[in-house]
Image (cartoon, rainbow, N blue to C red; front, side):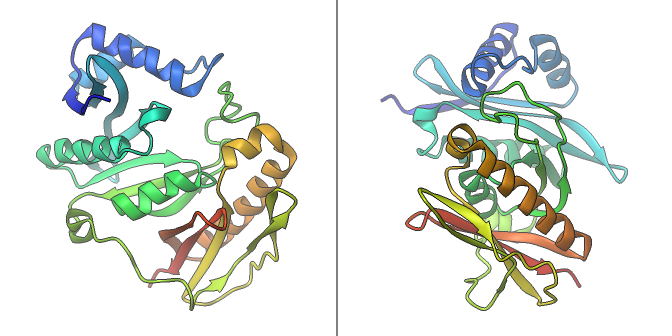
Length: 269
């Protein structure tokens, strides 16, 4: 396989390649693509659009647009898409780091985006490899999605805050220690071939607590949609409860062997 190369995208033909890649990654019937004219005008006015290429073929991209938060300029990262065969080779992480470089060159401090908190591998990338924090949970933020990846499940999302000039992000040293001493807000327990959410505790007052999720949520959406919905509603209640009481998510621990991961939440001073 050829080495992956990266470059900023600036032409209409490159934008059209991005649109085709959106359709391929998000699946047949997906009609919520960002079209060429929107890519063109947002890049013209401060957006960042970087493509990853294996030979001449585009295999991934990251796209963000200029934003304002609390009166300060930011980037809102709307899409990170990578073909399946490149999802474990570092392509996604490299695209994000290049996005960070471009934003720092603009004098920015913050990039934000949404992601599904039930997607364990995305959580692993976002927390462990990039160093995000999360203190905002949005319920069904995109409404009913036409993507087969979502299967009618509510599009609840974390809002990731990536403070790109912070020392721990610059040094890529993210870990906050293990979670052995953290209280558990729930347990992921065996339920046939899947894991179910059990023993939810919404009354914890400890400085640190964990929230467990299963891996393979996309597969669960298609093969066990009722269980996927139970997970969605249970974790929605957990996260909104604890975020509302001053906690935020600061790390994620992936346990591939057990088929689950755990968010670490800490109470803000």
